[in-house]
Length: 607
Image: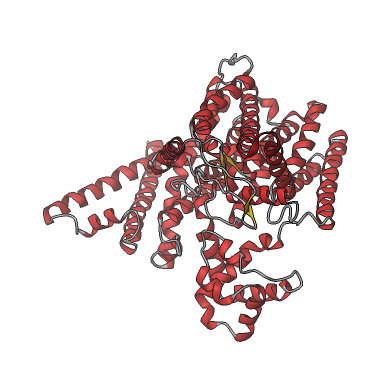
């Protein structure tokens, strides 16, 4: 009898708590919808207010609402009764994902976030309650992950897994690549090719190595067979590099997991979903970098997972692709150096690994500094403009000028004019792209000292402005239902000097190129398929895996995640909101990160 009473008491408390939570959840959602009629849920708001229902139907609506509360209470109570403890990390992950979903649900680009909804109490309560529903989903998902790790699956037997994956990826990509012959050339690549062919200002606004690589290949192609052959050579280089890197990753996934399901799922994501086929048909430095970066991550993960069993070839691969990745993409150099330093500190007691990691890190830093020194002193080179690294603070101050410019003193306006055009940035500021504001930048490094004083002064007065820009300028990277920017680039920039064309190109068949573009666009416009096109789904998937790794205290997986964690933070500082190419490293390595988190091998989980 005592057990029955105790169980009844416990169940009653759970029911009461879950009922209260569910009621708050429903009321919060309805409150949000009634305060923001322009949201994508405006139809439900109209139903709630009775504007779309006759009087008799309102009764049915409230019956539905009561049933919803009862069913929700039952589900929540059963869920809570099975929880032995509250997982804080899982809830924080759920809170982040909830915020990302709410953030992206508002189409008003100037204020796409929950901070503009209702009163402060409703803001806090709505996020916390909505996050609890996401917490239930994540807890169930993580339990499924545990079963996957512990499931005894019969090992697959796929011969030549990497080579087979390479052939399959090429076959799946070819329809789009061949439809756009000789290949697209985007704005940045056209600049790089033009600068290299002219022989001066090489590298201005772009990494030196990628400029030399793309400009050199194009020049070789021009010499051998003209502009058409040169463009085909660039696209072929990108296609083969990315296909080989992704095939190597697919083979790596198969060797680590010994799962046929994982192997074919990886090929589906990389081959059938048209993200990468659309990427390789356009000459772009970010596409080459993802090939180098995947090779780097494979070597980096092997060193962490294999411990003392690491082969010498793996160390060579780590160094070579660390150099290529660092020199071909801005910001990646800092990420790679930092993650290598972290790995040195973690492996400090392992003398052999410590020596090799120190040698690789030192060699990488020396090469980066040597390239910087060479490009600074040779007249044909022009180092990347330092305005690029000031993109975020320039945008934040520009937003401040737009919203509170009338409150600024003449002295503050003079400082802004010293760095950029005060009147112009108030007109051209766009949270989605930093280029209009960056083009007004005309300061030197010395003049930036006054800017930093002003930056912190304005931030202390209206800190919300800076936060609003970060949210408005990066929310597409975490909202899974936005296709992002430039899912497929279908244009060719022809470059000329003083009216004389450096090269002239056009598509072999504009109709075929347009058909390929429409196929990719159909994925972007479909409400379900769109999640596989934009960067939001891939970033959110990485965040979910990161939460799982932290919750299960998987130190090895966490070490593998360090470069991607830094790159994810870097998405907050990107120049274009939702630009797919800035998220390529996270999108392209999803199979690797999932495999590391779900490895079944016990010896691979503890050193």
